[in-house]
Structure formats: C-alpha cells, structure tokens
Image 1 (spheres, one colour):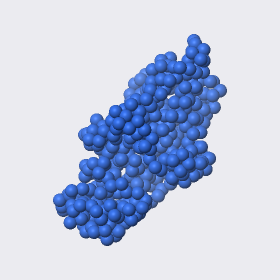
Image 2: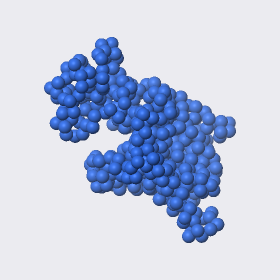
Image 3: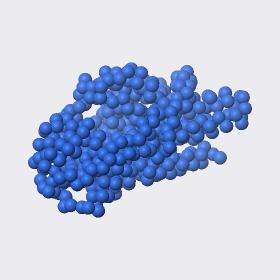
Length: 474
C-alpha cells in the first residue's frame, strides 16, 4: 500500500473520531472554546469582534461562516481543519524524505492535547494549520509566500509573535539564499503583514488607531501573574500530555537525531522556541500564562515530524531483532497511545458540565417564561439559548458590583448559573442572586461521571459534583 493511501486511511479514521467527539462531548473542555464560538457567531452583528484581542481576528473571521450554522457545525469545521493539518504534515514529511511519512498522521493525532482540541473551538488548531502551511512553503523554497502566511499566525494566537521572530532568523540565515544578509533584511518586513492588516482593519471598523492596545485584556499584564507561577520544569513534567506518555521517547530520540543530522531545523527550532518561551512565561507568570499543555498544539505538526524521525530510528533497532517483533511493538504502542489519548479527553473534568446544562435547558423549555435577557455563568448556557455575547454583563471579581448590575436588570431577566464557574469567577452564588430580587425557578445537583469506567495514566478526578440554577426576575 502506498504512503498516500495509508495517509488517507489515517485521516479517515481520525476524522471519524472527531465526529464522534462532537456527538459524545457537546461542549468545549474549557470556557474559552465556547466564548470563541460566540464571538465568531455574533461578529457579523458586532464587527468590533472581528478585530478583538481576545476574540482573535483570524479565528473569528474564519469561523464566522460555519458558526452561522451552529455550534456543532463550527466544531465539525475544526475536524476538517485538523484533517487538513494532518495532510499537510504528511506532505511535509514526504517532501523531507522521512521514512514512513504516513505515520506522521497518527503521531499528530495521538498527541493528547491535539486530540483533545481536534473537535473543539479553541484557537490552537487553526494556528497549527497556518504554521504547517507556512513551514511547507518555506521548506519548498517559496520564502516570500511562507512569510506572508506565517505573518497571519499573530492573528490566531500570541505565539505568532515569537515564531515570527524565529521565522525572520530563518530567512536571514537561510543557507539556500543567493543574496547576502543585508539584501534579505528588508524582505523580512513581510512577516509584519498580518499585524498591519489587523491594525488597518481595526482602524476601519472602530476608528481608533490604538484599538488593539485599548482592547488588551486587563488580566494580560506583562508581570501580572493572573494564574500564579510555576516551575521552570512545568512543560517537562507535562510532556506526556503534549506528546503522549509513550511517544515522549521517540520525540526525544527524534530531537537528538535531527539535530545531529541538521535536518528539519524549522520543525526542531519552532518546537524548542515554544518550549523555551512558555517555560519562561510560566516561571515568572508573564502575561497571565496558565501552564496549559494545549499551547503546544500550535506546533503539534512540528512535534509529529520530530516524533516520526525518532519512531523510524526505534523501528530500525526493533527490525534488527525481528520484523515480527517490530511490527507487533508498533501496534502495541499505537493502541496503548490511543487508549491514553481517549482517557485524557474523557478525564477532562469541566467538559461534563454540558450534560447538566442541557438538562436544565430542557427543563426550562418545558416550563418556559417570557425572557427578555439571559445572564449566564458558562458559555454553553448562552450557546443553547442562542443569546448575544455582546449582551453579557461586565461582571468582574467584585461581588457587590456584579449584584448591583443584577438589581438593575429588567423584568424578564433569566439567570442561568452554576455552582462552580459563577462563584469562582464572579463571586456570586445562587443565594446571592435570589437575594438581589430574583425568584428561584429550579436548582439541581448533579454527579457527572466520565463516559469511560476508568482513566489511565493521567489523573482521574473522579465524579464531577456540580449544581445548576435557574433564577428569574418577574
């Protein structure tokens, strides 16, 4: 069977799994996913969202089309984008002359964090697609086109700034170049194209030449450790969540062999840059870095390319012992890695809240009241009610400020609140909202288990205990 046929089979398998994720897990594993979807869905009514810092211009614009068809359509669109990312990663491996280039596809999707987001509405997957598209252009010698595509990474995530600097160094010190360093220097300005488009679009839409600065989230201060600080070894300890518990070994071997062979330097340096940058940000808490493994989904194609090289090195050793042993070992590693990956997804604690939210929503539909406005603590609540995220009250960490907003809310306001996100983010419990002039329609406690009976390797948090509340101002 040809490599291309194998690649298409792998893409079919993981695309089918992506569809299954959409059906079995109806919401994002973090609140960010639902918010990004809501920005994209409502951006046509509120164009400022197209150029917002948190709403991410590239994501919001691209997803604004499938989002019109609903949340599931937007998540299925991510499945499509991830399949395209897998295909481009396969073509990059093939062009680089790597053995078993089709193996790069399972080694991409079996990265637990990539698989977790492969049917989500987070910003990392679209960043990964732009990254591998630009890298392939660069490696094929289409330097200018590669820089233009790479310049749009900043429109998807902040990592685009750091990889943009790295990209400039690649261009300036490219051994294939026929001109000298100083002649190439002006061409690197192409890497600012995406930022320029963002600034111009923001100016045209808002009329504010400093909109991007003024729109910067308050908790993203340079030295504002919103989520605390962590060890300099945070991402070493979390590498099983990034590459996979077993696949960490071929990743490490691939790093060593590729550096020694001076091959695929773009993939290696991109991975190491993100590793170094995020380790630094987490250590000092810069820009509110939270230490999430999902940040590495941005360079998941690079990780897969590095891992497949290590996979091939290990395969050569195994085949020297026995061909049957080598094939059996490969099957075992892939099957066990798949089990770990599925376990990682199912072990996500907050992803289960969607079942409770949906049950409360169904109850309200059967016991409806006239609603003028919905106030919510979780994005999925807003998604089910198809409300406008622009109408979300400007809640913060000041409880009294938040309660004053609710006291002034008009009749017909429905508050859909939970027992975790609402109190931790906005310092308000259902009792506080009731005391602010709302009538409690229903409160329900839930025990939310994962779909799997047990979880492997990664921490099993046990059952999720949650409460949901519906309160109404008559």
